[in-house]
Length: 265
Image (cartoon, rainbow, N blue to C red; front, side):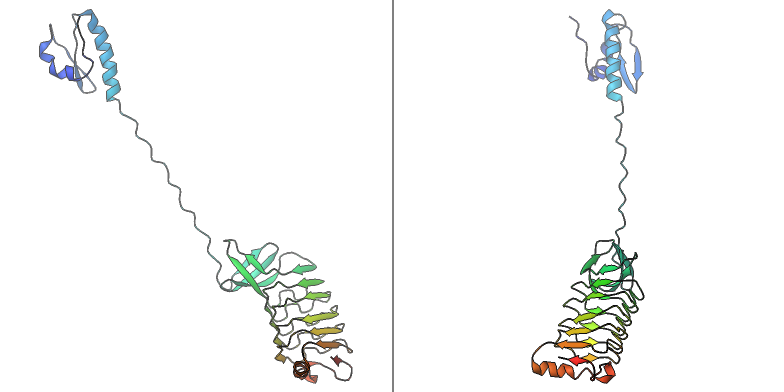
């Protein structure tokens, strides 16, 4: 039985031993021996060509995949920049702190949150109400968040429909004209940590009848702070007699207090 080679090593080592004429063909750069006088040669030739072609075929190289480009990360807003969250706008005042700057839509009732977040996910404490934030707005009620320490100048000035104000226990300072001209306001509670009430803070609140002073840390009351409030207004002080007497001395004619008609108790 005649055995036919099945690999390319036979091609190069047995060229000299062909039984008849030798024909050299090149298939993709590889020479092969063809036994032309044997009937089986045709089968060998066809099979070998296919095998050589397969072995010489170039394996497709994988195409490089496009690399995803890194997306720019949002940066935290700088001090002084305005951010919007929900229906409110804020101004960055310090690292991790913002002032409530106002509502982005008309609303009668406002609840100032303790914290808020910017678009990049940075969380801020809401530590103040910006100057003029609600000046002249048609507010009816406002509630301050637990981190608000300062109400800036004229924050609620001219809010003639503002009737209910809830100040949080952490509040420290009520600045100049904060509630000036809030004619619908009938009562207010000054929280226990307040140390300063600015001038004209409640000036012109003509229906302000009851002022509950919870703080025993009050250091100063600005001029005209309570000028032109309800003429028979009552100031309710907290603490022991010694503390009360100290605070009573802050309510003078200069602050708008009228000894003849108003009461300190």
